[in-house]
Length: 278
Image 1: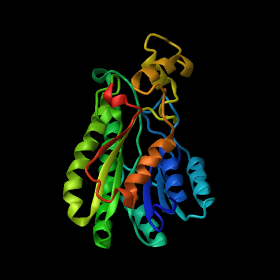
Image 2: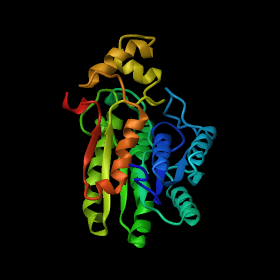
Image 3: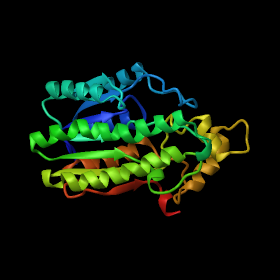
Image 4: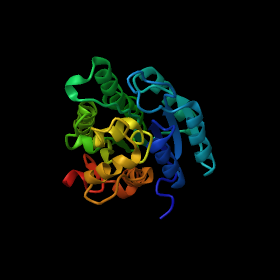
């Protein structure tokens, strides 16, 4: 079935690469135009892998335009409500309306929960939880005013449904998204605006392909590598794969954004190779 989100406009945060770029491309393949935002700048407490660059965001633009879809890309920080509002206003001014919100921007850092410093905790909650709330807060009044319904999709994690060692701040933020999603799903149902979360297991992006994540699975090895970490990755999932691909999450996002899911709201949807049931 082609054109599952034909004529719709999707606002995607963290769109420069990884899951965010994949979501932008997958929705564009099915007919959506895109408002893409990302912060191509470092975050001081994220030290194990490089964050996205302006060149990454430009590549997302090129991939969407190659599909003959329109895209408005802006640099914006989900911690800064004014920058989100400005990016969304400019996107709607050019593309005409808003239908889909994919609050995807997020970071990862690592350490036992009692050893995290205040800056690591604050950055994690500010980006992975408050940033999602601010993304929704920017979009919801515009969706309500348009009176055409809509779909909000928050990127959580298996860490939003279970505990995972050495990422207590990440797990706290991702659990918080579930509470926010369920509350907003109730608040917005009367406006025909649906709100759901997706919960990936490890996804093959920079966020897991780095020494910090590899080290979680090889804690006694001073020089962790991907190869050494693979058995640990596999052990996390019921289906014996080390990770899933970004498009696997994008397909779930596409479904939740489409009219096929028109009566699905308040759902925490795992795309996790069975990690939550282990």
